Length: 238
Image (cartoon, rainbow, N blue to C red):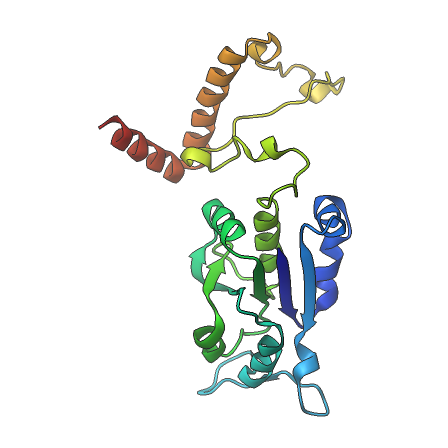
């Protein structure tokens, strides 16, 4: 899969792919990263890319003509264009799985300042997403979040495909607590004992315990998800 980032700050994107799992994915040609500097498409001598808002208001807006020229150089018939904005719906795990399965080229438009000209969103964006109810200074971090989440659902990106099983948000539950085998000598946690069933080797009982702990964790931390789980369980029982 190819990921294209349109940004004013290419170095904010490039560094994320220089280590760990996604670096290996790039080296193994499982994903391809393309970074486009929006400023390269400015046609004025100062390379200015933004302008004041029509009707007034604080903050400058990225110009439609510049973004259009940038997009037209990277769009293909297989492209799926995503814009990150706080006014969109939240990106969730099912979106990551769906996009990984359906598309071969994702283009992220990374806004800056007050945002981008709305006409670009109307004309080009296939989907718009938000990563949470808070404001950031630019779209690079949200774009990287989506790229990471989508990429790990691509075959062979993760070293062990089983790592995708039993994760949080599967079946409307959070993942059960996990622990290392090593016994720590740190006093602050030495008196915190592991669940005894984890170390007895009875995988059937371990699955039941993890399921119960997963329910407890979901109910405590995310009652909204727990409520959805109860509704699904009720519907399945009918």
